[in-house]
Image (cartoon, rainbow, N blue to C red):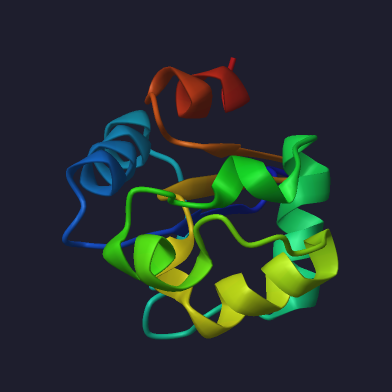
Length: 117
């Protein structure tokens, strides 16, 4: 039985499209989650971070305009950041690929490839 694969995808993002193409080329069955249309709940983000072995700071897009305008230089705890990311999904790094009990941000694409090695 193969592990479930999901990709948190933004079709307008080149890196996200690269990860999706990689999954296609590999012949992987996967589920696409358009996270801008269906933002993950804080608990879902927390689970993704657990699978990544990462911290909330690892998935925040600090170069986004909304980050610079609303959040830069302010201190939030992890719980608050998870709520902020859920409410502002544009701030979530993309793509995030999940394979079973592991996940990775697809920047660079090597991170995704490592999930399948």
